[in-house]
Length: 367
Ligand SMILES: [Zn+2]
Image (cartoon, rainbow, N blue to C red; front, side, top):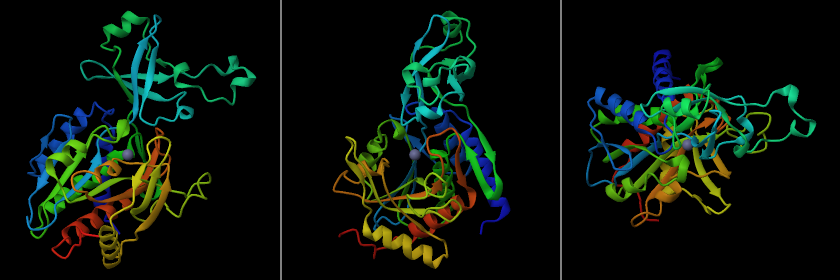
């Protein structure tokens, strides 16, 4: 069980990460925050042309090298038109659920990187026709009201076609160490691997580990690829959410619960044109199962279709990369109010540190 101060510190870090607006392709502010956190811990990092942030912890070069990554970006919108009356029309960036949008608080990032407040409009109830009541409004019919008088007013505020828009940053603590936030996916993953970097940096016996905060995952799942091509790791471990099934609308899906520990994905698949997923490398599954038993960390198992991460593209790079998706249980994915549990994040961090440092010359890459 985690100490109170450890979960307090993690909560603080996660809140700071969630408070940054970082739409896919516009992750610079998240990058700046994380590189500064790394610097505070005397850890050097560098950024590639796409914006991926890489912190390499040198280890035993005779061992297979590891990349541990989580994505910095978040889903949202991009302004595509400013109406003459100042309302903003937007395109979706990533898997934004349209039915969860009316009445949402949003922020629009202006040219000076200032966050301007807006809301996604919801038609006055008194004027809503019967047949409109149970319909989901399509993105093309939604609009953002940021209080502008007209198009010129919006342009003068530094907003234009191409301006990034995200859910307004939100974070709050709930009961039992559960926390709710606007971009838990995947700032919680970033917080976890940041903590892993701090711990592993102090360890002597370990493989070389590249801790990577990646870009554009929500956009096209491939932002990490240049890093893979450059670093040529042998092992890839990706940290992101695992869907829970402990809510009334999800009970059929799996046996993954909030607060019951980190999750290992044994199968993920996404059809609908993508045809991809991850069937993890057996040696990595064995390693994580063994370490979780030794460390008495409950490890939940996930099999899910309809879900995809950038790891699915990573595994096919170079001569093939031993890949594993590992995650923290999370509710209400891609909504503006995602929920995870701080104890799960701490257990996940401890599991990753122990497992990665146990990668030795007996680790079998060959099938
Ligand atoms: Zn994610």
